Length: 445
Image 1: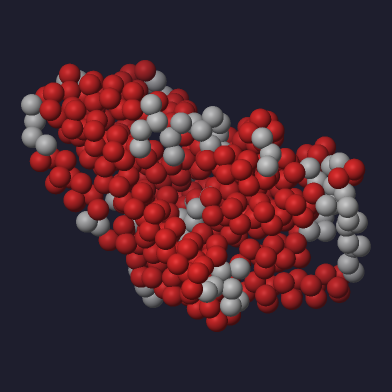
Image 2: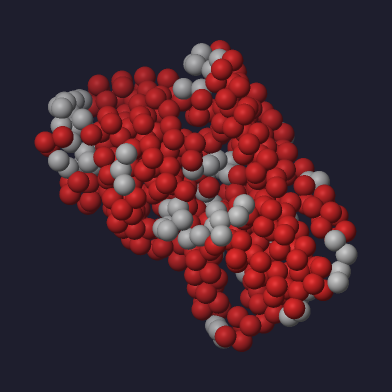
């Protein structure tokens, strides 16, 4: 390993703990290493351009814009009503409404922050009136916030496909079963935990009386009809992609047109002001993602160019002789990064470094994508740096220390077990894409 690489790592770590923006830090670290080794900086310009000269970037931009439109188009109320009609009457069902609503909303937005930004103000005060503690409802919603990373369409899945050169359709399918397992696990754990966080002194309203079977079915029908335009968005996208009607890139554009139509003409809650807000927030998000992808690719390829990825693979294979231990070490490494770095930089930086390692182990790259995306999703809810905790704390008024102990229960009893199952049982991630797309697309697993 050259002096330049070591110096680049030092610059990166100092800047990281100093709180510098990651996009510029990637470029600064690469430039520092190149200058110390006496190499030309033209490598940075060429790599930066080629990293963003890719059709997947356009797809990411469309899905980010569609997700922003969905957040501002009045879908949250209808999805909560639909979720309540499905699960609101069982024990712990009021909180399970939050899980189902988060699963649907996050699959529509493809991201965690817009989802909880819409649902926490809507659900937390409402459930507190029935005696449910604010901290528990907030912690449950924050813990569920990353489910959109696993339910297509998913922005992290698109970024992984860009970095690892894998099929977007295959990876969209590979994360579905892990995502549903997480939602089911959260619902089961909530069933046993929810009564501990009831405080009837907070209750100002009495929960509605149980409906008869006929009344329940009538309400479910009405709620479904109201939510149908919202639920139609992912349906149109997925049927179009897997039916061969349009490409993932075209699917993003169609999603934007669909959301504009629903927001303006069906729900009529999208107007010029909210449209401008969506455009502005989307442009900021797309700009940040693009800079991170381009600058992170520069740094990752600089490290690969000097053999760091191969040296890392050789070191880990010498350290652990068994595949099961290597995969365990990889998960620990990704979870550790997730404690301090957001998901997009991890995808861009870590995936190119671990590809030589998993290739030598014979790990299917679609399977790897499911493992990596699940890891970065868990990083969203893992202290100390957990964006969902920061956003949830600000929106609900609960303190960081109130949310963390509850969220750790969902992480340790549901998140980590599902991660281990996904890691060591390839069928969980590879069976569905193989079934629908064929073994030639997915490869051996």
